[in-house]
Image (cartoon, rainbow, N blue to C red; front, side):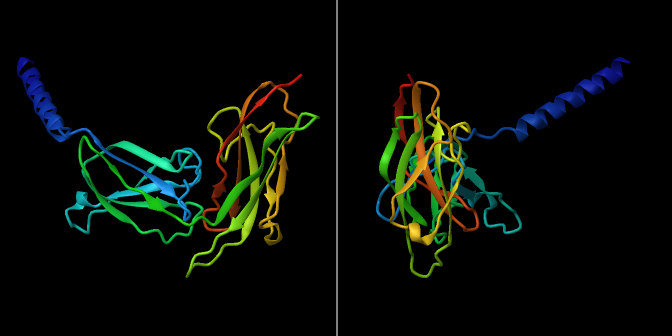
Length: 244
């Protein structure tokens, strides 16, 4: 019995050493950050996380040139102002591309070397399908509804097909994370867009009268019938509502 116990203990020790050896990697400590801007040099407005696009990164140095090794891409989250940051990547060489957003897809992939303890900046410029701007910022009507208006412009890019229009929405949120999600009690349904609406003031109204006195975050988005059907956005406005 003692002999069997000793053998089992030896096996456990060997397995423990093997496990330690396999896990003996440096923790991911390389960073990447950047800003996406539109063709006019303005921040490209996005939804938080991956709601309207993501940054696609593929570590090319992992394979050491072995084409039989498949490396799966990672999708990095976005912030609402079109910026991104991730400081938990492994050191190495990466291909970086803005991915699955409401912009013309011919965006050049950039190759960048990431080093431990350092954050490398990688910026991009994209041409959005639509540019949106506020006409009337969010305001309250006498009967307690929240209204706002905007107009949009369809952008063109040489050699690219301009997608058809789809719809627009105004999101009303009780938190700062406003975009593709809002308070369902107040956020109205989508409005179908037509070519005749381009450049015209379009007014949107909350589904119901606002019931509670508090700060609300408001944003408008519009989209086209492209592959991913993601939204182009205005920036986010706040309104302090006082309900009598």
